[in-house]
Image (spheres, rainbow, N blue to C red):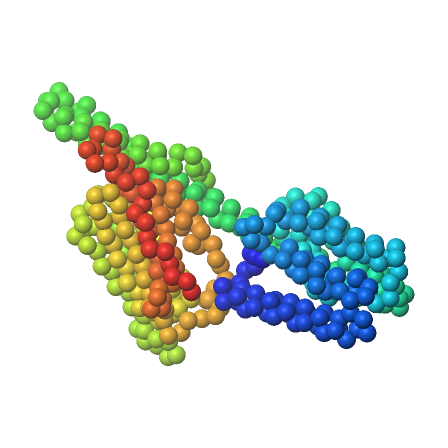
Length: 418
């Protein structure tokens, strides 16, 4: 099962292996205790929890493509376990087994219910039913000493499992709210940038319109080039507004005006490079831009977004792998601008990055890139290190073209498994 825990894939695999090992040992202990009984097969309630209900409950905890939804599974196993417990209570039988594997399955379902069930009322009802089912299990033994000790111990375990499930639920809710806030903030930041760009274009249009009005009486032949410039500036402004027309903006913000993308990236890579210092390896960054990228007509909002991607990628390299060597590559074709940032992994990869754990920078970048009809791919490299690849649309597809431009960004190779 996947509880969306904030761990690395390696830690998640370790947790899964440990859980499977614990279940295997629990099942082995159940079978060993059953084999030690004087008459393992009589009564039937002695072996049913070990060989039937226990394994079925463990299978109900996991998810497969054939599994029914979680809530129906919970009520089916609750009915099955309560029926077996009711038989033991109604017809007292010496030697009936509680079943440690059955308890583990019920606790696993309880943890999933508390952590993952979307509707609070359904989660509360299912958790209550599972808790009652667990607390009834000691009554199968028919011994009051076993009942009192078992109910006490299971009550403590239930409290721990429910608390853990609620903590995971609250942590997941906070993570979703943080992701929503980051996406909204990134949209607003991009809208503010576009506002300043549009204001810049409109100022130029107004100035050229006044110039055309001034020169028309004396030089009418000079008006036509000015009108063409006004039309081009208006088209670029409308294209920028079309891309993020639904994005709102804040008032109290100092916007960043775009510069030439190549010069900005050159300054950014130069600022990343640092000489060797005491205890630190030297860090270098290299910028490579193809001829197509140097001559491509890049819209201002794409320039800003490409710069932000490179800035965030270099910041992450500095935080997570200080001393890594970085290659920044810019390429373009007739429709797309391709930006990739790769690093070598660095000799001093840190377990805890400088500045603490963040985790939301790439989420904001993906929101920004996708708002411009682009795509962002991140992942480890086979030979080590990390890669960030962003693809931006240079121009919208024109229906008048003989060969239509692709509607989606060109697919990138999927990142290899870590």
